[in-house]
Figure 1 (cartoon, helix red, strand yellow):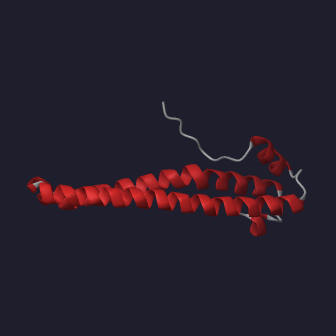
Figure 2 (tube, one colour):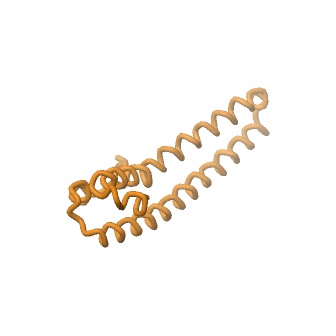
Length: 121
């Protein structure tokens, strides 16, 4: 059985940020740490989706060479593959980068509106 995991902000940290209980120095450190983690995660997402795109392209080329019917429907298959790759990228981005970014920025905006522009991810 497969388990899907999402990167999220810890609930204790989110509530402390929303209430303004974290020192400003620590907020800046947390922000910079999350920015570097998100950059690394984004790179991983791009690499994974790129590998999948290369594999999908190789499969499509192989099928176009082998099957006459595929050649007739080439545009449909290419558009479908591009849409599938975009959906995979969007879901991976949401799971590894987007959720934690939204949670942190939301908590930061409510607890530290003066630091929001400086520390948002």
